[in-house]
Image (cartoon, rainbow, N blue to C red):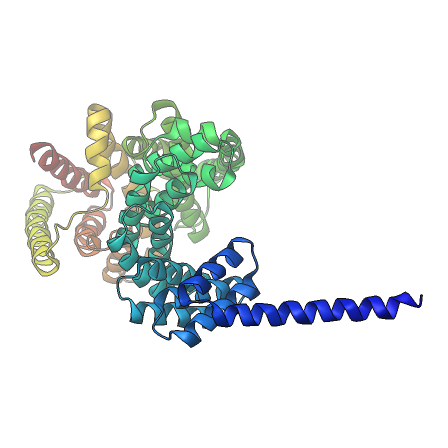
Length: 473
């Protein structure tokens, strides 16, 4: 125990002499030798010592860009990001083409969520050194955070040219392409990432979305096969149970002189729900999502047509649905045809005017769907577009909806409101006014004849001429 104080004194003396010797040695080292020492200290993870060494270099030579850059690296590792960024900036001021300073500044700024500064620094770095994979990857991430999607994709492209098998680069490029709605290109990257690291949920989910967006239905449900059951089964059960209830009310004799609002809205909901319900299995079997939208719409129209022709016609308010449907007098038919020509010309002029103002070709968003459907099911698409869907829509809008509004509104207001609803449910931004104009004509036909016959004929004519135009062009 008596030797312990003596031992401690010797130890303290040794430490003091070591520090003194190091200070004396440092005073005798050149700038280059100190830089070498700092590098060696960094290599052995002695970051505090390295920081002190490079600070000494800067005190000896304030214009030493290398010392500022390495000092910044030490400060970054030690958690002093703000000081590190200042050191990197100073190194760049002293040496404007010092690529390592730009690289480290880009990394440090990204960690601080300074994405613009990070992107600027890394863009400068890759202009000086185009072989650094990690620099391109981080540049892409910075640009993605800035919502510069096209520039981010370009950076990821450069990264993948250097390392095509990298998981992160494929994932990040796929996500950027998804944000730009370029699903086909994104699919390639997600497939590659899924091959590199199979089973990763963060890859399988966007890949599933891309498969759906690109109509690769079978591949989508191979990734998540349970989704089809989870989505389709409860929807199917609910749909058919609700449909049975609607059929019961449709065929059961009623006392009211007008169709009910809830009853009408229920048929509206079931008409559009059925389109989704029938689309899932059809698309899964045929692997053509877009091409089967029309076909699924036609299938969902069948229950409504059956209820309209067999059930609604028996009700006190069912005269417009009674067969044979009335067309009206020759004069009424001639007037309707003349007005249809005028409406068609006005709609054509409107579309041309909007195209000139926006410098874009204005078309209804159903046009690409119908065009694709014609390639796959030409006859079925033609029958659906010209006959089935117009009949269902007339039963729904000029039949049920017109009858509901007839109880509460004057005829002119009824036609206008019914036309507004008809145009709105089609979800066509630029096509709203043309659809509204057509709806006014169809509403007039319904009122003038007291039947759905003429409105259905004009609706079929309108769709048929549009379909003929598509086939010609």
